[in-house]
Amino acid sequence: MSRGRRRAAAGMVVCAALAAGVVGCSLQADELAAQSPTHSSAGSTSATGSGSSSTSSSGSASTAGSDRSGTGAEDTAEGEGTETAAGQDGASAEGAGTADEPLQPGDSGPEVRDLQRQLSDLGYWLGTADGTYGHSTAQAVLALQKSAGLDRDGVAGEATLEALAEGTLPPLQGGPADRVEIDLDRQVLQVVADGERVLVLNTSTGSNEYFTSDGYTRAAVTPPGTFAVDRVYDGVHTGPLGSLYRPRYFNQGIAVHGAPSIPGYPASHGCARVSNAAMDMLWAQDHLPMGGTVVVH
Image (spheres, rainbow, N blue to C red):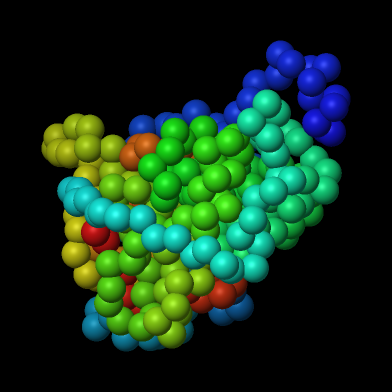
């Protein structure tokens, strides 16, 4: 929809591309399957959710093929500071939107494409800059808003565009040259390769609410610390707390996994949710390999 046509449809829901957050890491398998492609690997062992699982007790790299189940699990920490990347290509947000008429889900056209390119230049992943303000673009805007400490609505308004123009990025905690960082305070996930930040994603971690599973009541928290990926599952993995899309486990039952709903606040049982499209990208680029480092802070 063009911006002009959107004016005529002033009653449309602004955040149609942002599904309401469902408290908990668990998701229904049919909901995931309806929104995600089916994945399989040659020679893999079939399991619940039709996927392949790979495990390693030592945390070292291994090939997929062994079958193992996992569950969702649980703490929180905080971070400080904000970085900027002024001077990078595409850092100017001029022409991407105005205070009177912000860009938002459902928009399309050259201004949206310009916004997408600027977000991508900074590392906020959204897939292809196709000129359509869809779910992935809204997720990238949410990640920027979280990094800048702004209201989290997925709409590129004046303050968001100013943060984009300033090249705002979340700080890095530090660690091995190749790692994934999960910032519990800002609710963003960052991919670092060869010591350089390459991607920033919107994420949703433990809600800090209490829940009961298998007769035990516990808090939905994501513990801080440094961990290694020790299990992966290429498919929809169903456990006691529900279904996880292509999970990569790094702390017992806690994983980075895909989900159709990644709100602007902590909403899981302890896992780190990202969009299904982002999870596909992480698999394709192998950013969470077996034995890979995950820093939660």
